[in-house]
Structures are given as structure tokens and as C-alpha cells.
Length: 402
Image 1 (spheres, one colour):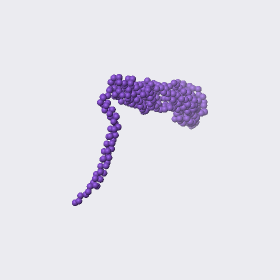
Image 2 (cartoon, rainbow, N blue to C red):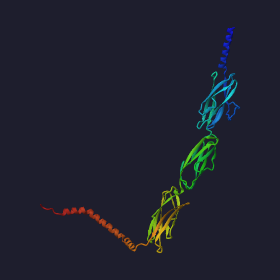
Image 3 (cartoon, helix red, strand yellow):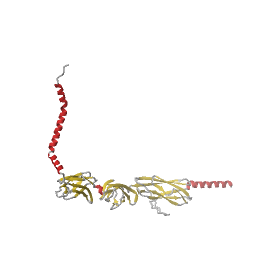
Image 4 (cartoon, rainbow, N blue to C red):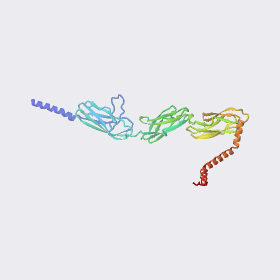
């Protein structure tokens, strides 16, 4: 009797061990994409064993159903491999007997990850050490991809102008995209429109408006950022650097002439040079503030940067004009900016003696210069032939007898 009881006990232990070795069973199933809401406890699981299509930059969740088919509770561990952009929301969990639970696989392919991926979900039970695998076919597509281009990255401009800078959005993706543009920079940069709908493989131009103040000076950076409206992680950025020269300096001329001019009641002219030292072409209106016997021969000139023009101021006082100092202001105007230079004409009657001497010298100037040149030529000949004369003189002398 004792022997029979012992055999039955051993048999019962054997059955218990066998139940753990063979009866522990569970299954893994995949479901359709599910948008899990915060705090949600239960979901409606829909079985799915096809290809999971997802766009780069998107984030979606695949529910994984784990079914404990056995009459015993068990612990399970899951692992997911096949891509760097996948993650399970739980790696270890327990299930009571004949119960099921859902683990979520988060997939979020980044930029330039397009392609087919074989994702493997591996399960392992704590009791029985039973493994189960579930393979998922994931196709990451380049649905949303775009490029951002500016017509230039640097520019040099004058203050006081309005200018437009063109740019282009290029949709390289497989789907239409709504792209939002933001321009960060000085407060005189704006856009008429900042949201653009660009068809797949299409292009869309945009413009930046620059209303540059006249006194702006320095380098101003404008950063243009673009992002897909529903996928802000897909973005692009470009920088435009605008070097602004104040309007006054942009067209600034140099007025070059003598600051003090002496006139002896003669009809004469004074040369004036105007040089554009700015960075842009300028059309200057020219005026002279002076007595009516002083005039300038040009009223308008157009100069490119570093270009020079020659003008003349004519001075023709009559005998009734009193002697003295007469101020002259030469003014150049470009649009609403004025440049000027002050000079003076000293009007005086010439000394009679000096005038006579001057007239004499002017009249006989040719003879004076001719006499000086002839004298110099004679001196040159004498010095040039002096050694020859000495040689000839020495040859003509008779030798003395000893």
C-alpha cells in the first residue's frame, strides 16, 4: 500500500513538471495601427498581418497582442529588433491564465530612412522558457521631403530702398505638403505669405520683402526656416546676410577743388572734380550758391562708383563789383540727400607794377625761354668739346730739344 502511494505521488509530480514543460503556451499577434490616447485602458484590437506603410518623420503605434493560452499565469519579456527607430512601451509584464494583453510598438522613422524593414518581435516566457517570434513588414516611405533655396546668401545694399529676395520650396516627397515659412531677422523683413501648398515633386516660389531704413548700417542676418505643418520635425533652414551701407554714404561724392581762389577781375575758370566714392551709381543734380557772376557749366552728372567727372566754375566779375571775399557753395543732390563743399573767391585788383611785370614777362616769355635754352645748349657744347680742344692744342705744340 505504501509502495502504491509512493508511485502515485511520483506520478503526480511528473505530471506537474510535464504541464510546465509542455502545457505553457502563448501567442503573439499584430494589429492595425492604433492611435493610443492618454489614459486609455482598453482598445479595440483589429488583427493585421500585411505591410505597415509609414512616412519618414511620422510616428505611429502598432499594437502587439499577447495571448496566454495556458491555465497558469506567467511572466513574459518582449524585445524588438530590425531598426533603430522602433521601441516597445513595455519589455516585461505578467498575464493571468487564459488572459491576453497588448504591448505597443512605437515606430518613428527619421529623415533618409526610406526602405523596407523586417521588424522582429521576440517573446520569452519566464515559466517554461518558451520563445515566440512575430515578424512585421514595415515600409518607410519618403512621403514628405523638401528643399529650401534662396537666390543668394549674401548681399550688399544701400539704406533707404525696398528690395525683394526670391526663394523656392522644392517638394521631393511623394505627397502634397503644406509648408510653413518663418523669417527671423530685423523688423524691416517681412513676407506677404508664409504658408505654401506644394504638390508632390513640385516647386513653389516665395519672396522676402526688405524695407531697409535709410540710416541702417552693418550686417543683418535673416534666418528663413521652413517646416511641414503636420510634421514639424521635417524642416530646413537658410541664412541670408545683408550688408547695409547707410544711404548717405552709399552715394557720397568727393568734391575736389581749391578752397580759396584769387581773381584779379579776369574772366577765368576753376576746375572742379566730382568723384563717386559710394557703392552705387548716382545721378547728381549740381547747383552753385554764389554771386551772379559765378556760374557752373553742368547741372547734372551720372557717375558709377569710383568714376570721376570734370566740371568748371566760370568767374567773370565786372569792374563795379567790390573787392573782397565771396563765399561759394557747391551742392550735389541725390534724391533727398544733399552734399556740399564751401569755397571762396578773393576778388582784388592787381598791383599795376606787378601787372606790368607780368604782362612784360608774358609778352617776352618766348624770348626769355629761347635765350635760356640757347645758353644751356652752348654751355653743353663747350663742356662736351673741351677735352677735344685740349687734345688738339697739345698736338700742335713743338717738342723741346734736350
